[in-house]
Length: 190
Image (cartoon, rainbow, N blue to C red):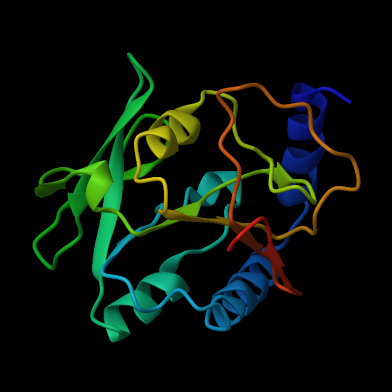
């Protein structure tokens, strides 16, 4: 199956999830994250949920990070060159949805990708080797390739690993972990 067919399959599966299921499973994902040994770092990058795409609700993870007094970093997408810029999320950060309904910071304190210790990665699907399929624009692969080699990359998914191994290219960046409502997957983490 091609990446575009996997995308179509998992988008359809997500669209069939009820609001209640999304909330319950997002909370279960946040609770499973607490089982990982990732909480001794300083800078955590997280995506803000695109509700229209029925993404994992990251509000629960944001609350965990705030409760642990971590530096929370969010991004702004540039659709001209498919790059992302990153900003510290503070009480003064103003958010606005862009034309793709992605909540983004209007202003803020810039953060370099080399400062990031942990990145929570959105995805549509993943396989048992830690390969992920996103929306297809390559934003996260470009972003993750500029992070430190030891930055921890954690996918968040409502669904378990696909039984097929995805075809990958040299630009694809593998996950270190993927967390679902039912379990935590670990890939080649030392």
